[in-house]
Image (cartoon, rainbow, N blue to C red; front, top):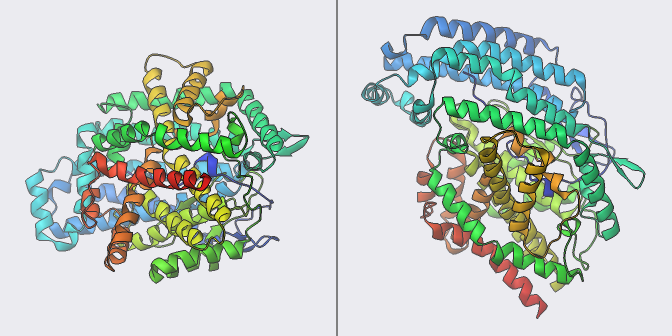
Length: 622
């Protein structure tokens, strides 16, 4: 069965989305720049074009190879010796790589223009072909789980190269209690292209086509969200109300998509005997549900100390009794309103990486030089930002919507952290390079922290330092508090959907409840804000993904504390953690830093960094 890689697995939360000029994307063009100097993708490292001979050859090879793989190995895995098993899994890994290359190319082409029907058709056709081919492979994971544990251990002991795949076997076998019959697994595989993925595409196409009337200007979703951080409060308010009108107009559609996907998941979860809606995500993340519960509870208990306290400060800075939603990401009155050019942003981030580790800086350079970043906003382009790892024998591609604000520099640092991580882990091979989402977010957030600390050290005035600290606190709140609120929203929606169809008003009320709890009494909420849940892509593409952001932020804060207190051995340990990919467990990786994620104090330590920044901001007021 083809691995279900989470596309856009690093999509930033909506609060970090930004937008400026536009361009017409052309995926067949070589790497280049837009007129304003922003880089564009060169996808030819995947395939030169949709009708390229190399793509046709890979499609034909995949169909035949999957069929031949089944003919050779179906019903025979339990009888294979260690050497034959190694040949089998290497062959399976090559199938994963080829299928991943095909789908990644189609996904990335569509990401440049979500409303282009030809690109959508191409993606749909490629997904269908890969799914059809993968039907021949359903037996593989099922038969692995039928092998006796003592037999598997003997095989791994006998062949050292095969033993390298032990983490992969462990992950597959953790799913054993939840696997279905061969026929049902094949049905679910075949049906997927017209099931959840089809509803997800409908969501993407709808969001990609969004247009908002802002003072008689027709703007995209990104451009309108960008105005929510404008220094002029009237402009922010106008943008927020335009968003509210647009989201409210499409409430029935988004409610239908949500009801369908949540119910579909509930049915599959029930058949798989998964105990909770979140269980599949925890299994995919290879994490104990108790650790996630501890993280969630620790963060929620910190709402008053962090977000409630910060936003009271911000209301005072803005001269307001209460904040409206359009004030949440407003710049401080004394903040310098300047545009940071692309070359300067590159220098800031790469220099910060280089000061920590020259190896990280070297790994980041090709992204800027070889067409691995697409930075300019464009009509219909995927909103937000992500780093898609594609496959290990190519390289990651980073998508941005770069606006030239300080927050955009931090998004670049975030996604470049993912990209460097993905490059370093690629040596593990296709089956072992991917990390659980919790650890994937660690590298990206650490990249942000390095960049922030470099900017803070270079601050020239107390006002500049205050603006940097406030911006970092807001990003941390967006990464920790906001994402745990998102997680609670999902938990409640999935719980309530089991009792029956959810009408839009019910979903809206749940959204307002979690927002009020997390943001605190400093906020009032305008009419229409209750519909702002509609455009969050995580709820559609990756249910319960969002706690990974909070996990990564708190882990990075703890890691950075270790880094500040450590001798020279931290950097090699950190790079080794990134290079390990998915070949080691969370506890194994954290042991090198003497950290334990099962300890509530671990999460409190991470949150104390945010609280400490707020302490410093309060002290600046005295």
